Image 1: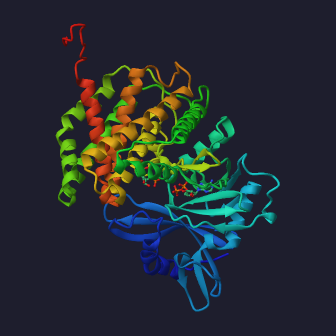
Image 2: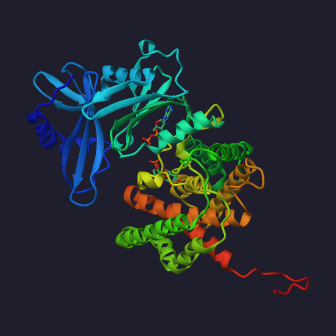
Image 3: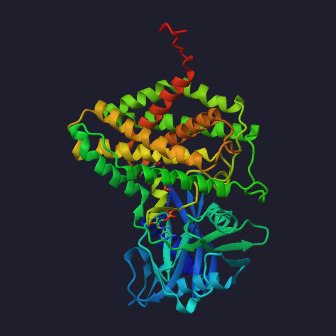
Length: 512
Ligand SMILES: Nc1ncnc2c1ncn2[C@@H]1O[C@H](COP(=O)(O)OP(=O)(O)O)[C@@H](O)[C@H]1O
Ligand SMILES: O=P(O)(O)O[C@H]1O[C@H](CO)[C@@H](O[C@H]2O[C@H](CO)[C@@H](O)[C@H](O)[C@H]2O)[C@H](O)[C@H]1O
């Protein structure tokens, strides 16, 4: 096993990590003013160790990261991004690139082993998805080229393991969700839970280090598939033809059905507290309202700060949003007073087209970690499942807006015309998805007490999601800021419609 001396620890902390961390895709603190990196714990795993590193900043809370470390020969080929430090005689690498470390992780899960650490243990647990026949001796492994906020490994071509990089003082919601759905529900359109590794210490909350699921050989994700549908659709747009293949509706309806089945699997009256359905009590209503108003405050400030960088059409959309603050606030405040008898449950939390893989004409849902901006405690709060539905509906809106407004094929078409075509496509998909979704529950269902409640909650969550996305785009994809703004404007129009007094046309054609 690696034994780090005090000098080596200091060297890593002060000379190596400030550069190395900033080259890692999974390090979320790149844009923050960094103070330093400190190795808080060293957890032995076979010949390697897992370093628990604290990143501190001049502003805001520190973060904890997991960095597995192995020492290997200089001759061993390791991707550049995995090399932490080279000395004259050896190299220190991110241990995910060391077959011995990966083998140890798999062996621990297969055997449900507990590896001792200074003040506790690394406890591995096996899930139903791991076959007895897949003993560690017959399983090879490799790192997957998935470059995201976590690291991914494949075992025997059959099991997908995600090593969480940013750590939280709690069980990761993904482990709770995937193990619950695999072991306590009939929903089978997720990769089955195969196990996890948790760092446990007396008197401290458990910390999830990694999770394993069955591996899926997906053709693509549903964002890419929807992009294909839209490419076909776009051919007709310049010549004024509005054509959607019947199979597109079938796929969208199937996704609605699967989403409904996922929520039925998560609707578990009589389950343990973490999964038992709850009411829309006053505490939750105030939480939702506060979350939305805080988000709105932050987004308005961000928009004002970045206003001059926006192009003119986007500025116009931004204006509509800014002028509608009072209308939005009035609508949001209804969350406190409106009768709401629908129930709330654990949900996916970050549901969009990219979180659904397509496999042999069906869908597999992945990535149950929840909304990246939310704290872990917030990610475990129960919501109406319509929050997930709103996420997916927003995603269809994104897909069509990105294609129609950003493609070379539609360059010569006026934006008014594109808006009409895009709205029409989006509304057809939204209604197809929604109808198939609700059909999965039968009517009435305790999760949806009335059509009135469905309309209000869906609009509330559509607004919340589009406002969240506005921040994501300003920070990461400024050229797409117009997309969530279009979504916000669409919600504003819907709220305005709700406020209009009902117009009745009498037999004589007079309005009353
Ligand atoms: N069970 C699985 N089998 C095969 N590939 C998977 C599986 N789960 C996820 N992936 C792949 O890994 C990528 C990242 O997974 P995801 O859960 O979204 O992690 P992250 O939250 O780190 O982005 C996905 O986009 C998908 O391509
Ligand atoms: O990285 P995650 O998948 O957890 O989610 C974040 O990134 C998403 C972008 O990939 C972002 O999703 C937004 O863009 C999607 C298209 O790229 C679109 O389908 C989604 O509807 C839209 O929200 C997501 O919001 C963010 O949390």
